[in-house]
Structures are given as structure tokens and as C-alpha cells.
Amino acid sequence: MTSANEHGGRVFRDAWIAGVTAHYPGTPKDSYITPWESTPDWERASAAAVYEQVAEFIRLTNGATSHLSPETKGRFVAICWVGQIYARIPDPKPGYVAPWEKLPEWQQKTDVGIFEAVERDVNGTEAESGV
Image (tube, rainbow, N blue to C red; front, top):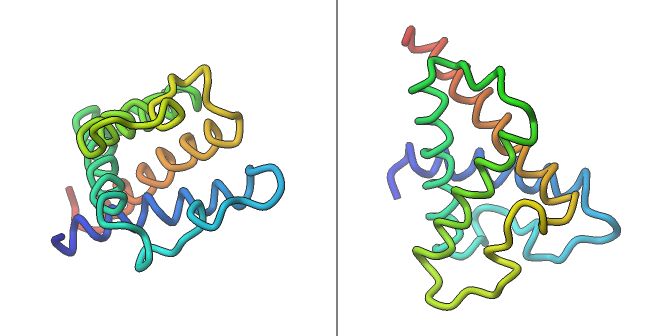
């Protein structure tokens, strides 16, 4: 994994952990809050890929994603994640590929937070690089 991919994957994972910590009812499963270094390779690659999908969407709209509703942002993350699951797991559990409407509220809120974390990262990075 390149350092750019790792950066994006870490942004995604940090936002996931922050969302789980803030929104999960009760005590989350250990795997939900596992640090980046201990996250399985397939999950790290998926996190990096979804970061890139969201970041490219933000860039290609010239930042107009700031006008999207939180739900739309969360749905985009969820759809990208489901694509990664199908790409990496031959026969995923139904809960891994559940549609937005069937995701628990904590996960929906976490997905919104992931999009917004990528948005902040992309906008900060591009502002610094003059893009």
C-alpha cells in the first residue's frame, strides 16, 4: 500500500472508530475499534479504496458535495463500502451488504462522519497544495 493510500485508509478508519465510539449503543465489538495497525489487510485496502472514491467525488464536483445532505453523504459511503465487500468477500453475510435503510442508526451516522472526514481532509490537503 502506498503512503497516499495508507493516509486515506487511516482517515477512513479513524473516522470509523470516532463514529463507532460516539454512536454505537453500549460497548462496541473489539473489531469495530481495532486500530489501523491491527486491522486486517482486506479491510485496510477497502478503507483506502472508499476514501479514494469519496475523495475523487469531492474533487470532481469542485467541492460542491458540501451542499449534499448528511444522508446523501452517508449513503455514498455505504454504497462504496458494499462494492468493496463484494470485490473482496466471495459470499458476504447479508449484514455486510445491507442497504442503507437496513443499517442501524449508529452505522448511518458513522458513514456520514466518514464522508465529512474525507471532505475535511481533501479540502485541507488541496488548500495546502494550492489545487
